Image (tube, rainbow, N blue to C red):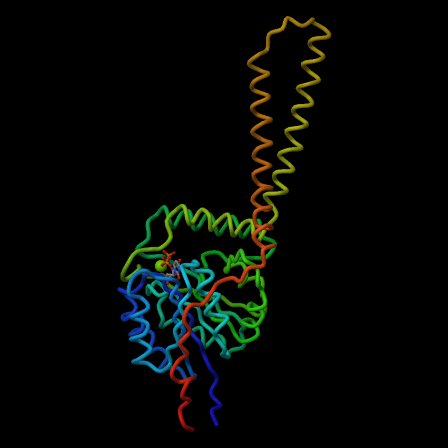
Length: 320
Ligand code: UDP
Ligand code: MG
């Protein structure tokens, strides 16, 4: 009987046709070197290039490869979710398809997992080949969310990690639509440990995240994992109301003592504009949360699968 433990590697990919062969060529020997029954689950996130064809070629040459295709581009978080839902193994690893996360690190993940950790996450010591602006904004974001989220979210940690079976099962139970995966991974808890690695430059193709996407991603992360902006809106509102009240008293007092010469248009405008601004800001914050509530209330499926091709090893199990 097959008593080996199993490992599934989930690889979300969007327009990665150019580099996927090279990725698999580096991943395969790593898996060969592990004493684990492994699978690689490639998830095509509605790519517009030849990613799906390349995945089929990889599946044809390697019986460990399973391939999923989403019905359109759902974004990395959901592509990852589809792969994690499909995976059924003692341990699962999530890794980017662009070789920014070195596949060789998986061997170290497995080592720590065997020591008894449920979650081993990769923390980036250095990020090579990315602009200072991206590094700076990413660093700021991780510090900020680390401070305001009640769930501690480790800094400089991407999605590259290993989950043991119970952490993986727990994660599968989190079905919220607004999926900030770094937060969800952390929320699960259990015994977690960091593993420091060097993040390499992307070896082919270009990043799928521009600054606008990253900004939205940051808002997603903050509003999904913290109600701090709502509280902040309240405090700013209260503070402004106090100042406005004080100013009102002063204006009335002045008019009573010195009479009212009917000037003060500038101060009136200044106060009105300021109050209007604060109100709109608070409404905006409330709107962000309301919008999320609205989306959650629809209870739509998180993603739709177009094609599912199990690994050949699972269709025709090798004879004992
Ligand atoms: N990705 C995806 N769907 C998307 C965007 C990205 O599956 O809509 C995948 C992409 O193919 C890669 C990983 O997510 O494997 C990380 O993306 P990328 O390298 O563009 O992000 P960066 O490293 O620049 O933050
Ligand atoms: Mg990348």
